[in-house]
Structure formats: structure tokens, C-alpha cells
Length: 198
Image 1 (cartoon, rainbow, N blue to C red):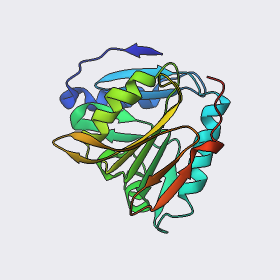
Image 2: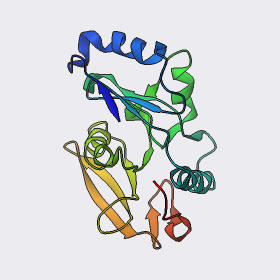
Image 3: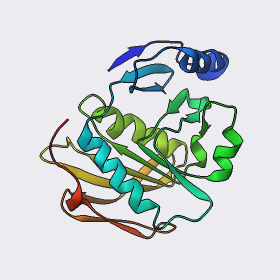
Image 4: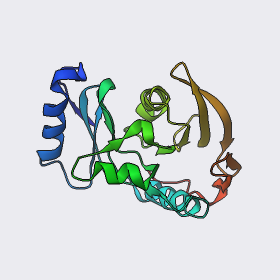
């Protein structure tokens, strides 16, 4: 992972920062996000990471309202906080994506669910920075699939953001089931998640 520091105050430099993010020639397949006013580049995820994303993606489509979508490469911005993330999965209403047409990203506070799957290079960001950022944005649910949690892989569901902090709703080890409450009403069986690889 590498970072390009910029003025952390998003205000007057946000447009220039986003333009740089949009127009630069980043390594193919990498994930490029703006985290607290800093451009962060992470390498493409490994096959087990992608397989987990696909399994969760497929499960979500069985319960979503017809006017919501699940996206794997959608930029979600919270400009007042200097953040533009590309979650591993994000559920947003179609109307939010339609509003973003012609723009580089959708509004992060409009997300209904964000899913992040840790990699060795980004685990601490997903556990700490992004958990705080999603709570600050008021995203109702954050599902953290932590493949590298000590002492073993876990899945944690955060929700009920209050005073910009999440409450831990449920935490399970890989191999157990985790339940997403309404409006999803979905139980995910983590026993199908691959354990190996980076």
C-alpha cells in the first residue's frame, strides 16, 4: 500500500484531489481511495478475497428491494470528511447511482450497507478507519469480513451508528452464520468462505 499525502482539510482542495484521483494512471486492478485526505493505493485482492465478495454479492441479491443495487467498484464519497472509498461491496438505491451519473462517485451517507473484506495491506484501515468513517457517515450497517483477525478469521456486523460510533451487533468465526437484520433479513453462512490465500 502506498499513500500520496495532500492537505488533509477536504474543503478547498477536495475538487482538485478528486480530479487527480480520476485522471491519474493508477496500476491496473489496484484500488485507489481517498482516506482522510490522502490518496491510498492498494494492490488487487487475491482470489479468496474475490470469492468471498462474490458469495456475499450473490446472497444479497436474493433479498434486496428491486430498486437497490450491489456494487463492487462504486466510489462512495463523503467530501466533508475528505473521504472517497471504494468498498468491496456497497448496497445503495438505484436513485443514488443515477444522481452520480457524470460524477465520479455516489454519496456515502446514502449507502444502506457496506461490506469490507480485509487483505494484509488494508486490515487496519478496514477495522479502524473505515469503521469510524462509515459510522460518521451514518451508514446503517457495516459488515467486516476479517480474514486476518487474530486468532482466526471473523465476521463482524456493526450497526446502529450513534454519535458517529457503531455498536457491534454480532461477531462470528468463519464457519458460523451471521444474520443481517431488516431491511435485509439475510443469514450468511460463512462456512462457504475460503480460508486460504492472501
